[in-house]
Image (tube, rainbow, N blue to C red; front, side):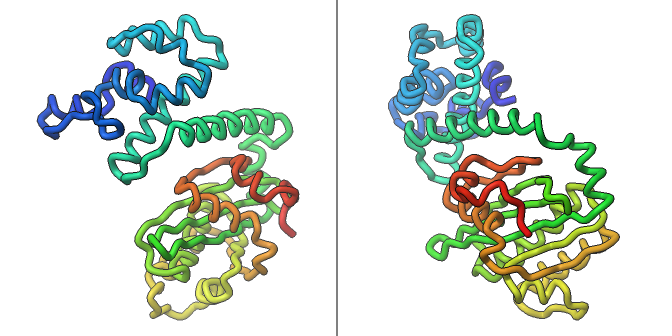
Length: 304
């Protein structure tokens, strides 16, 4: 979708926004050397040139074509399947990193963009290989409906900038991985509140998976106790707890259980890595490479 928008010049570059009188300054926010249009963003900006060079795709800059449609069709006519996969991923990540700079003031270097592209390509390859051995989505849904689905949740919190993240992982009772999810938050006051949000996202993940019987497991004894309580919670997280209790009606059976931190390593690692990279994701029957690497030898053994 991003490549299609680029090909039709539908992306909101500062040049396009200036034409529509949304902004006055159309200079590139990354280098400030030229007007920010598609040609500059993807071909002429120093950071983009650095990325193309590190990906061994510098040849596609040999044609100085300011017509973005002409440039794309020229590249697609000459690149191999592997080169075109990298090409499309890089277009996506260059635009993504540009938006992070504009809206979040996070400036990614060319090397960081290359690393993210490499991780993403690896994830695609791992997911493709995993489809050979894992159950089909439809069959795994039937299995989980006939038994119980276990969802572990945990949270990570940065006290310096009040960023936080929720980590979730879902299994069926036979140990088949159903989904992993990371949700990022900003301006959450304390770790206690983040844990409550993580519990709420666990409930929502169960609804998303369409399961009927569910066990929600977390290593915050207080949050688990509040979720199990039938009394109205009047604490600072009362509104979140009420949301959790309301969503419980979506299941035939639901239980909340406390587990030790050591047995919640998967959800904890997902939350920690999502916070460190400031990234969110949702994957069915797979985990990101970054989480596999962080957990190491503990993966892919399912929890007890």
